[in-house]
Amino acid sequence: MLKIFFLILPTIILFATSCDNKTEQKIEQKIDSTELNANNLLIEAQTLIDSGALQQAKLIIDSVHNSFPTLRTQRIKAKSLADSIIYLEAKTTLAYTETLLPPLFEQVDKLIKKFSYEKNDQYENNGRYVHKLLVTNSNTSRNFIQAYVRDDHKTIVKSYYFGNKPVAQNSITLSGDNEEQLFSGTNHQFEAQGHHEIMTLEDEQALTFLSFISTYQNSRIRVKGNGTDSNSSWIYYLNDKEKNALAETYQLGWLMKDIQKIEEIQNSQNEKILNYEQKNKVK
Image (cartoon, rainbow, N blue to C red; front, side):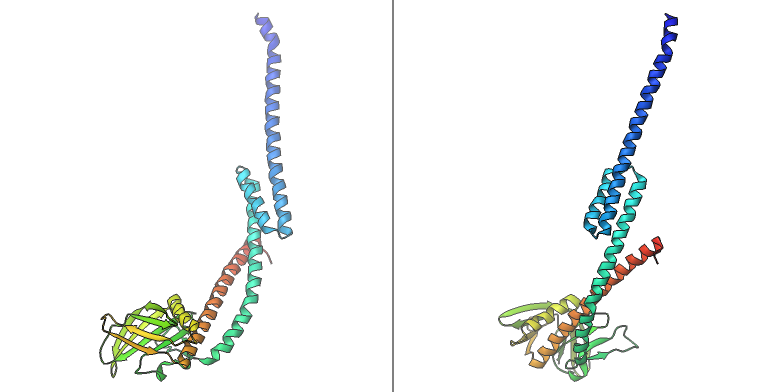
């Protein structure tokens, strides 16, 4: 019996070895097939990128990451292709934004002639563009609305109150064509040959305020100032020159804001381009 076992032992070993070899071959074939599939997807993604079909290429790249999480080499290549897409999109976006700025600057150049630039270098970090009809020196000791656009692109509206007593001005109600809107802001008070109060609206709220005036520019616009005391209120109407000056300030404010947004996009795209070119040594 023992002799028989030793006689068939080589056959058993040979069979086992054969099975192991077949298993290894199947595994190797599976690995080769998986890598081949991943590589084919990468080739397809590169072809799509070369043809400008960037969105389709992104989908192929995502499928490489999702379908082959263990293939490190292929995923590194997929990441590199994704970076190249970001680079190409950044260059396209940058080129497009460069076409948007010249007409905006042209509009600003025409409009800015109606404004004066004011800045106290000793006390102020930002200067401002104030419509020549709304400069402070021409409107002392009266109730009026002043608006300006700072050189950091922010729009500011100030409601000036002048009287014999404080009213703690905290809001303004604009009315025009049976429409009205309430605006609340911060208050600053001081004494100088009478009592002065300034309520300030900034940026988006200021633009909304000026938008109301621009919308109803051809109507009679009533300004109602409100203090903390219900009995403390005052009313006046904007004249045509004031309405026109405030409407033009609104136009300038939006132009400057649009320019700022575009420049921020350009800075972001330039950073992406620079990072890619430094990483990939693109000249």
